[in-house]
Image (cartoon, rainbow, N blue to C red; front, side, top):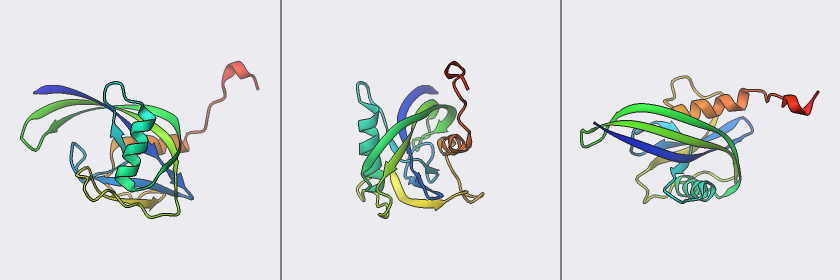
Length: 152
């Protein structure tokens, strides 16, 4: 077994009680619904990577991105070749805005995304989602805590 660290930028687009999700076409979350985004390589700008990933996976242009949270996730994953990987993923989750009046259409040449669509909130209980979706949606429901240094 070998270890692998992956850092990725994910976008949470939530508009009018709907959230934009993609269905993974490969990797440890194969066929699971996830936030659109992309892995970050050495020296890359996370927002630029996010913009490219959002467009590739949904066909929608990124209009705005604001860092919401960072979500660490550890798991063991068996690759399609049968190798076991001890995987550490750090998801930088951004609150994003995309053109919401268009239907998402993933790049047909991409192996990463099976489909993309808007889901009504709350999500169906039987929908298989990644831990990044779970964490991002929790961030939508957590009230912001006032900074004590700012006074009341």
